[in-house]
Length: 149
Image (cartoon, rainbow, N blue to C red):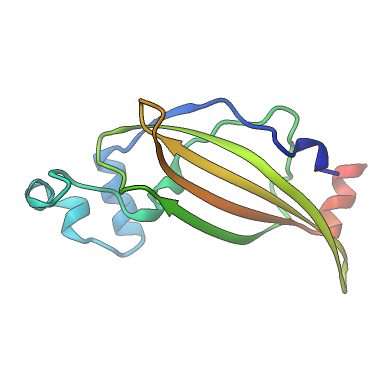
């Protein structure tokens, strides 16, 4: 069903690690470490400025892949792993894109399930790798039937 999308990639989208958004995100996840929110702590750190929490990249826009239409409900978040070159610096620009790297199916007690593997990547303005988030989205049999109709 989604095999034809393997290798498809969105265009890069420019994002900014905004100070206010970092503060709100840190509060939302319950991690108000001074390296995220206190400017003086940031200046004294090895990064010479504040950084964002590791999972802050979840809020970025990664663009869209033409023709890929996943339903708004009925999907299961199966797995997510992150790989970082370095932390995200507050106020830096990050260029993000998503790529579909795999799709496979398995049979379960409730029918077939599809597993869509996406990689969300962030680069700096020079195209240097900053991070990658691998995400597995599980598509249940119910959702698969709705899509194929």
